[in-house]
Length: 115
Length: 114
Image (cartoon, rainbow over all chains, first blue to last red; front, side, top):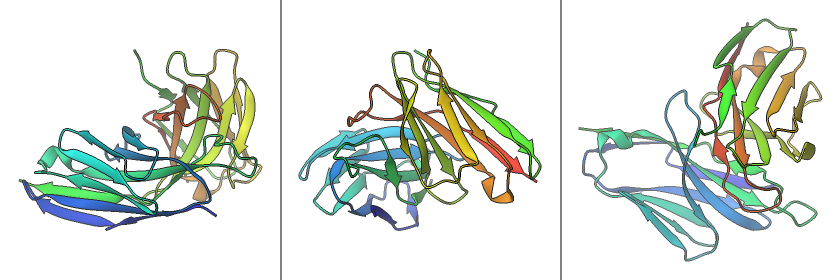
């Protein structure tokens, strides 16, 4: 069964203090890895999709990277408005060899950035 | 363009009742997926529908059912509600089925079962 584990569960940073969030996965056939941001009581907001090991994507203060077993979300010089839960999800093939759209999520990392 | 919309925003029900949640996908998207998110956990996959047909089902009891309409909107029904069904129910839409298209989520419906 596909498994996704995120660490740490919670991370507290001072404004400007860079850090990384980890997403490790054990899957049968990775078709894509997705990062989402979720604010309290709201739906997840799409950030990045990574498809193959070695791929990197950036958006403002965020940079996502992918290896064969894990993904990192690097946050450079974070601001208080970056405080949120960051979710990692994988899209994998089913027994028939297609990725019918089931995302398997990790439990999330709660990021708090203090001014 | 409007994103994914869901209704109602909040809902309070008692054990044993039935509930219907609604979702309208992004214009042009033909696939809708439903997820359940319990407080403190990541979303869990319930169903995916594409072109009005069920294309995937997660590990949920038969009390959970869904359908998709010709305009690609969708309903999730839950019968015989249990306390453990209290959660944020999320709808996500994507362009196609069986591809790596990004799934875009709506704001969710918060269901509380008393």
